[in-house]
Image (cartoon, rainbow, N blue to C red; front, top):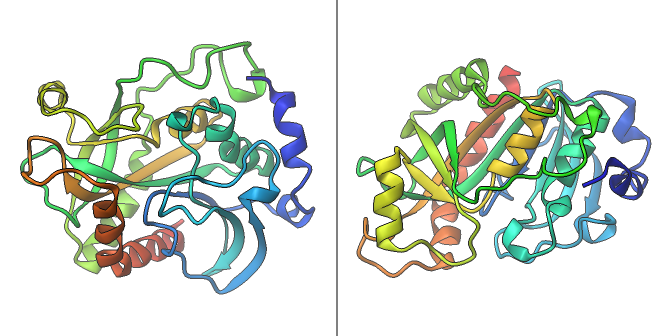
Length: 272
């Protein structure tokens, strides 16, 4: 990827997006699109109007950028994400992070829906990520080094910020949500994993599995952002549960958990 490839996309955002530094950037994953509470909406831009990004192709991703205020904080939210499995390269996947970087944003909250591997988990639980395993084996930083994106070999030791994790836990305790820390296994998709693969991921220490989040968090961490991420367990992974896996489960689980998702994000914004 080249930084210049993002210039056209950045040019479609109004000046108000760059006048003040957002206190927080948010990426809303599958089913999380209705989880925002706003005091004031400043900007709404459909993804279809953003060059290089384009409309999302997955159900549960509304596909719009929203700049808004809540509890005195300025928040830049991406309602839906592009995925590597859509086959259009890394640029669409990490463009939201590059726009946040250009806005000066220093904190990111990424959300997703994931399959539960840890036997203690059930659908509707939340998992706050403490680490991840990149099972795809490639990442968006491959290519010509861009100094603005951080060092050539960025450290990923503490990719998920402990202070931000503590804020999520504080909110979960206040809201009485079922939450645990966990490790996220990133696969390319779009097919769900086999039962044998899930057994292997479990042996590696993974608690949840999904097809997103890791590229954005790697890019954000490299750029110097503090990152937090939370998964909604939408279903049990292959071989853990007994029902066939289907994306409709993701949407249904998110609908049932909507009030908790919305409250958790609202509380987190207030703590930034």
